[in-house]
Image 1 (cartoon, rainbow, N blue to C red):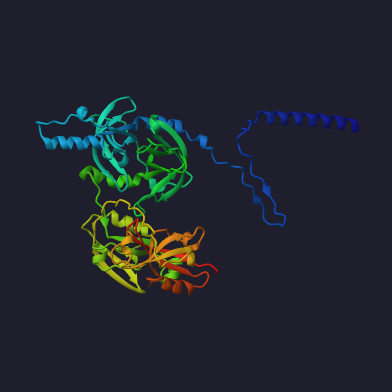
Image 2 (spheres, rainbow, N blue to C red):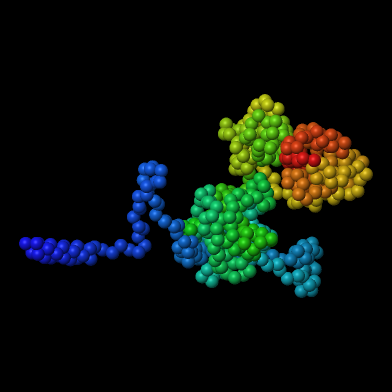
Length: 502
């Protein structure tokens, strides 16, 4: 009985094992890329089981198919050739016109210079043939030739341009043209992958890839600049070309490149271009609202130094003479806290809000002065074009000066006897910054050589002795609000400087 039982048990065990093996062999194989099931792990301290997260890696940048994006976008990207007579040739033509038909202008006889030529990039934005590019690409051009991706060369007309944002709109036609899809630059994120297409150094339809490095970069005009910074290679000739996101949409117009590095480029956000296209089509230029204020954000240091009750709003640094702001009595140190009932969080947003309004319209400003709230209604003027930068003020010799002392500044007294030596408004007094010591607190605070210091913590400083008295009374760690005039910009500004231990 025992032997028979053992044999029967062994036989049944073998049959069961065979059936189990057959069943397992019929199950489908799990793909090698499939994640392993999560495992339950018990904490050593007896806490409830914790589920381990599977190793999920983000997709590789190479999984973004920029080849397909470039193939779709290339037909909409154009090469722009801008030609103009040389300055000497234009002058000779004007002279010939004044001489009259009896003495016509002969370029060969007078040896006129050859025409000036420049190249850039642009991209079609609609089937009708409108092309976006940079203002500096077409500036001064007397003839524009656009080369399409299919090899055709067409003459183009300037519809309008906006030097303040470096945007221009030109047009080819008649005909029906392939065009790009415009995206939404307000949704961009730092680190997002982008590509640029253009004609750098005349190498047509060059494609480069990189990421967005920074958003809202200020380069030329701090009140309007909002550049996208990218490390996608941009070179001379890329100007006016599209910066494209991973969905194949244009989110910027490539405009500038750093001279110090080959991998730092800048693009105008496409939303900024969208906002001016209607005016460019209608009147060929852009009109913007203007109050005439130079502003800065209220930060903790400024709030502390000026003893402001609020940490938000836009602080007035300067008011242009004769401007709408001056006419309603706005003054430096006023803090604008709302426009038409909408709170002002940053000076940048306030400036853009006013610039987006039409000249002649009105805005209701609420501001705080010396702790008291005031409300004024201001009628906007038209924003003037960007002024040409002037040469920095020179620091000539004067008997009233300091060496590198308080805050790391060398200063010269400015008064009626020597004001004519410096590029400053008549009647202005203060202290001219002759030198800023490197690695000093003044250097860290952004005070530059050539500036004229007018006040410190709202106290006028007209002499070296007065400067030393105010600065000398500050304790280590105190923040000083330095109100100064910047001749290069022809405007006033406030810089905050934190004192150090002596």
